[in-house]
Length: 258
Image (cartoon, rainbow, N blue to C red; front, top):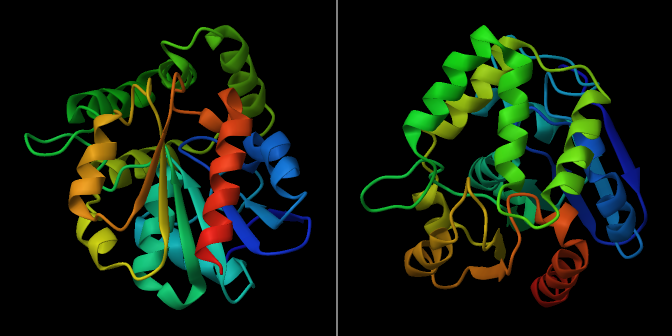
């Protein structure tokens, strides 16, 4: 079993935070500290990210197995951001006994768009995959810039993202490509329909990677899922609008864990 780096703060109901593509758990620090005033919060590095050991193959199946083995709490609320949202959806599908609720932050059960489903253009993901092999640092910077596009304070948020991503070693090219492949290939819409636990989907109205149209698509797909949209937020609402995100999560936790 590989070793995954994790830190736990606070006491109370367990929440596990799973970060997004190319990032690491350090991105959660300020947000996690605020959550930890009311909950037990575990921040964990995905395999091959931050301080965690790498997998021989960065596939969704192997990532999920590694996370479930590393987190010892019998049941938790699993909160995933972006790629992390895909990971926690798969944890809920394969290990429902370990999940008492889900929070999908800027997540999409089908990350790429089709004629019937909103999402990111698959051509853009493919371009990222191709550009990674040519110039990984420039590609990562472009990806970070996309996450905060259209935000009035984008320079401040982008600086925070850059500082965070540079604080730990960049994942290997194979790990980064594996993450993009997961986003490109995974379809968890049927899993959301079948899920028995409370689910919150939290989106930003100005997200350029997960369009706000996903909100209505998920409501139509599974009406029991709680969907919230934060006005003027992009792909990192926990950085740009932390108080709104915390309030929505607190209300969801109170309702879902009664």
